[in-house]
Amino acid sequence: MSSAPKRIVRPLAPSPRPGGAKEEQPGVKVRSTENPRTLA
Image 1: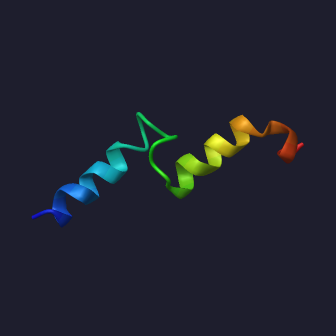
Image 2: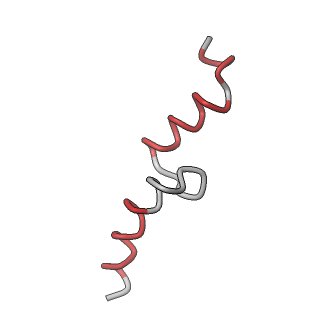
């Protein structure tokens, strides 16, 4: 049962807290916002 709630927390966490959750989608957005000079 602990594995079920963990999966639900991951997708919901990155939305409200992109910095707390370490996923690919939120991670890319955070990097582009924090280091805009790196992309430029």
